[in-house]
Amino acid sequence: MKILIIEDEPKTGEYLRQGLTEAGFVVDLARNGDDGLHLALNGAFDLVVLDVMLPGIDGWDVLQTLRSRGLGMPVLFLTARDQVEDRIRGLELGADDYLVKPFSFAELLARVRTVLRRGRTLPETTSLRVADLELDQLRRRVTRAGRRIDLTAKEFGLLELLMRRQGEVLPRSLIASQVWDMNFDSDTNVIEVAIRRLRGKVDDGHDLKLIQTVRGMGYVLEDAGVS
Ligand code: CA
Image (tube, rainbow, N blue to C red; front, side):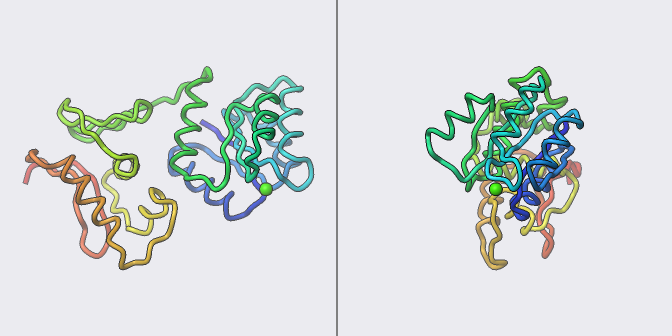
């Protein structure tokens, strides 16, 4: 799945590029409306994440031009504007969804998936599996050995990240930026607490413990066999 981001704020653009790449998408980033439009017209993208206020031609014009040239790929507006009129204008011009800054990456990702699912193109895989643990990304459901596990949104995001990168030791800083959209002080125990809760829900009552702490490094989820 190929996503085009048109965003002039370098930090936001990079953050989106990194997050969506981590989520398994192929991502191109344009920093102004003209480059973005040129790429969108020529690049066969499955979805465009489009900022409204851009140097050169703005997001409205980009969208209008795409639609007038017969390109119907989903467009998700991303903007600091939060006026009702702006939302209506965006939707009338043919945007598929509208997200107001500041936003959480988890919400953006959920909306990207929803918009893609609505369209004709379905993601190839919608569920992650490690041993008897299964996470359904579209239905937002987790089961272990066939039994449903109830998770909070943060726990779900954390588990999704660990499963997507199974076998890889993930440092806290990466978990903080990916799941909490922020950087924590290194002495915070927010992640530790969340991991403990998640481990309780996922591993308690099972001989095979999937979530491991790697001292001084971070956390890993893997099927390491029964010890
Ligand atoms: Ca902007």
